[in-house]
Length: 119
Length: 119
DNA sequence: TGGGATAGTTACCAAAAAGTAGGAATTAGG
DNA sequence: CCTAATTCCTACTTTTTGGTAACTATCCCA
Image 1 (tube, each protein chain N blue to C red):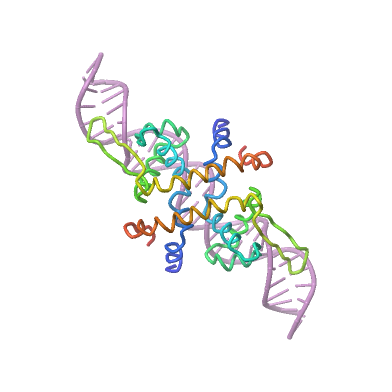
Image 2: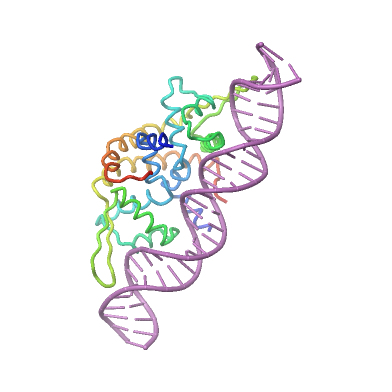
């Protein structure tokens, strides 16, 4: 098991997959990146990702924050205001992510035509 | 729920995540890409990914085949021989994946130093 | 007095993913 | 005739993930 740990720490693919290979992380990063001000509040994200539950969104944001990809700024107001934005590390990921999305746009249309995955 | 389907079909991020955002897909693609001949047999992959179970590997390969990213060639011999390689679509993904890996190498070392995720 | 808004957390449950262990099929080789 | 090699499949169990609904806290407004 210690071997597994070493393997994880050494392998950038596993790092990447384990940190934002989940259902919502990339979507959140994308939303933050395309936001005009570069900043989004919790409920603004919720409204844009209607099929992500409140729990999943806050969990996702917490993970991204722990990975230093997203910055969380709390304003001690009532009602509370919390603003999320990309960190510099997060911003540095965006060109790659953008390419991945572009690749998806280019190549999955053809795939989807032959291959229905949802019902 | 039909909306969710439409959203999925329309969103390249979800396409990408749902097709190879899982635990093993990227690793398999990477292995196939870095193989000298561009071809790997089932047990060759197994030996290189010791912590992936037989079941997971064959499931992963099947998914990648269905997404037209991996080609599966069966030779009707005894004992059986099956060779896996990247399709053209799979190959077209590799530059992006390589960049993602490079990004991981560059940026996660610093993150890991501050932030232990495994125990 | 009693919503409403904001940003969560928690407990509970269901579904999906993944691990384990065993079997199947075929033929060559001892 | 028994074993090894190769590529799986299947049943069973455990672990992880995700969803639902209810709860918290605070202040403003009617």
